[in-house]
Image (cartoon, rainbow, N blue to C red; front, top):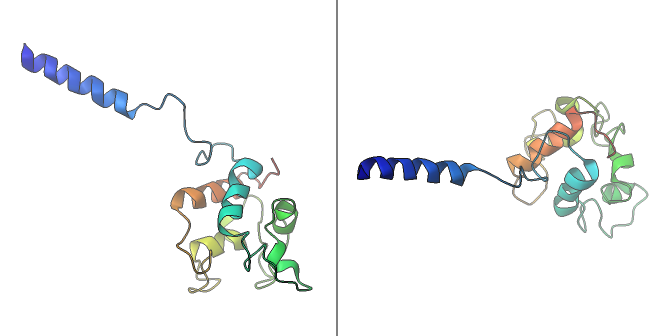
Length: 142
């Protein structure tokens, strides 16, 4: 009788440990990705940094300011890349043809040495998946 109780208790404990009563994390949920609450925070934390895409560099080209929260969406969706004008920075519904996605995944069509964020570890796959899902869902401004 004791072995049966032990097995049942182990089963119950393992089932409980895998449950998530609060649901999936909003940050990594790729069901209906929100630009403002999921994508922009990734850009702000990893890309919109001084001397990167939000830095103090003053130049006629706004490349260093394109990922600031107030202007990021307008600066990346349906806008051609300056480095590779044959690609749009973000082409809604086509992550594999979007320059942003190519940069964060190290796509060889860009350059094997130009993976972003530059000088930092690659983005975690969960962040890359959020950006990919957002683009593939139409890159909505939500």
